[in-house]
Structures are given as structure tokens and as C-alpha cells.
Length: 450
Image 1 (spheres, one colour):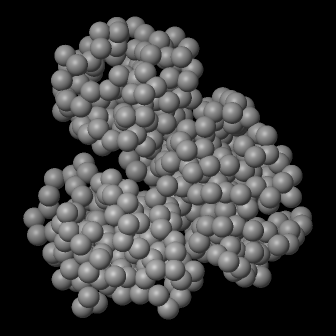
Image 2 (cartoon, rainbow, N blue to C red; image 1 turned 90 degrees about the vertical axis):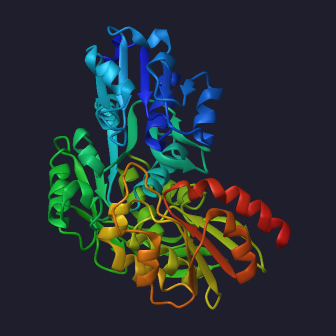
């Protein structure tokens, strides 16, 4: 199938962060775009404002007639949508071109110089930093991001087609559809065990990903991972290394060593050592596009961030409110450590919405250990996403495992009152579910209170 012959692109699950970026791309190159999603969100409303028709019922009759021409219509679906979905069945039974999002992403980027960011944590922040660095140094690129960049106010950037930046998602082995020129692996912690079964199978998939590099491709790996490549790290002997870190007014200042030079006094504004590592590997990858190191260092200092990645929503003497997408114990630990480093001696309340019954079950003890580190914890009910409930796996089950006695199970409508009752110095909301839809309401209410 040649994408040039396609006039119409229909998305099943168009509201997903990765799907919506692809939808923006096809709309930008003047294809007709429409789609289905089960829920209206700010993302889908923005898509409709760009002349993309979206409906919210699984109803074949709602598919626009333009998209029922089998010869020139491409159907893109997310693995989160079941094959029993009636619209999927409609297209499948009639022989339409049907592709997973990852397949289409591979097709779109295969003829470009492709940067791919892999890892169980850090993909969105790293790819957003990389896109920012390349844009600031004048590189003609297209970027498909897994979050809303605060620098572009979008999950999609089109400044040219010679280079591309994509997230190499391990879920459903999607990243094995890509053929990057330059790739990185930020982490290989166990996750998506509903797909892989065990951590060894997950690691094997990452090794398979490294074989997807184009000839003469380069791979960057965080120091300590069991994969051969160009290493990066903090205060070690990595090929790219950050040393002599200090913090001034919430900004990291450090020396950045490369295989050929040392840049002194580099600045970076996103809290957390994990974010320093994300910035470092984005810097290292961007050098492969021929960008001057000193210009990349200047651009690092101007990176604003990604929505829901350690995003400050309120920051004053009375209250610090941080929102983060953290949905894995390792990510929760990273958030806790960043708060401790940037806001020492302050009482922190964590409000966490577990994401997926399977992930909660697989990492229940680790979640409990991570969450117990905060001064107090409020749990919301598990967000099911694509899953059916697992008997016995509930937020109450997880709550019982948390050793910190200052813990509570609450409903979403109790969030504001609970925050006011506890009056924390630092509030952090975490989770990959629909807790993100509550953040503006929380910020608005607390802005009046503090």
C-alpha cells in the first residue's frame, strides 16, 4: 500500500495521544480524516476544531460515507480497541486497508532520518526534549509525541520531513515496526506483563528492537542496562556524562561531558535526576543530526516541559501542586525523589489513580512501597482502560499493602475537600487514567484557596 494513493484516513480510537498525533499529520498533508472514540476529551475537541469529524458511539452508520470507499481509505486502529468492535469488523469484512498505529508510524517515517526513543519510562519527555533541541537548531523534522509539549502546545510538530522523532512503544511490541537511524533505550523495567508474561520476554523484545536499526545506525543506552551501545549517565564513566551538579533557584547547573569535549555550566529546568538523564540522551542523539553541541546546550536551558510530566500547576510559598503521569512504581519513586530534592522538609500528599488491574496486580507490593514514602496517600479507584476487572484486585487491596498509616481511599468528588482538610505543603497527583481530567478543576479551586 502506498500512502500517496490514500485520500481518506479513518481512526478507531482517534482520541489516544499517539493516534491523535497521526491524525494531525494526515490532516496537515491534506488527507480527509475522521474517527471514533468512546469519550469526548480536550484532545478530541481540538481535533474537531481542525475539521476532523469524530463521533462517540460504536455505530457503523456514523462513519461518514466518504470513508466507506475501500480503494482509497486507510483505517488505523489502536491495540486498545478490541477486534470485536463493530466498526473494526465493518472495515475488516470489506477488505479495507487496516493498520495498527505503529505500522502506520513506521510507514510514515521509514524514508526519513528517524530518531526513535524506547524505554519503559521517559519516552515522552525524552522525545519532546529531542524535538525541541532539533527545532531550536533549525533541523527540518516531524515529531510524533506521546504527550502535549509545553514548547509546541501540541503532540505533533511539522517543521520538515527530512528527520523524524517518534516514541518506540514497547506495548504490544509496537516498536518492532520501526526502522530508526538513531535510537535510545532509557529503561527496561518490567511492565506490560499482560502482553509479555515475564520480564525476560520484555527484555528480549528490547533486544529485538535494537536489531531494527538501519545499517550504520547508532544506539544510546542508559549506563547499566544489559544492552551494548553508546552509554549515558550521571557521575560515572559513560560516553556522555553529567558531572558536578548543583541546584540554583530550582535549576540544575552541571558540566556535560561528550566523547570529544566538556561543556561547562549547562542549565536544565526540569526537576528530577531521571529528567536530567532524559535531557542528556536527547542531547546526545541530537548531535547525530549535525547540531553544534554549544547550540544544543543553549536549547536545553529553554525546554519548558511536557504536560503531566512533573508539571507545576501551583508554585508559591503556601502550596506546591505538581501533576505527573507516573503509573509505575519506578516512576512514582522518581517523582518522590524529585520532590525531596527540590522541596526538602516539606509535607507531601500523593493522590494516585492506579492504571490497569493487571499492572496493579503485577506490581502491588512495589506500588505499596513507593507510595508509602509520601507523608500521606489518597488512592482513587483503579482506572480499567482496556481491561476487565480481576477478582480481588481493587484499590482497597492495594491500600491494605501500604505501610504508611496516613492513607485513605477516596472518590474523585472528594479530592478537593481532602486536600483542604490535609493542607499539605506539596500536593502531587499521579496516574495515567482519567485523573488528568481533574487537574484543571483542582488547580482552579486551590488557586482561590491559597
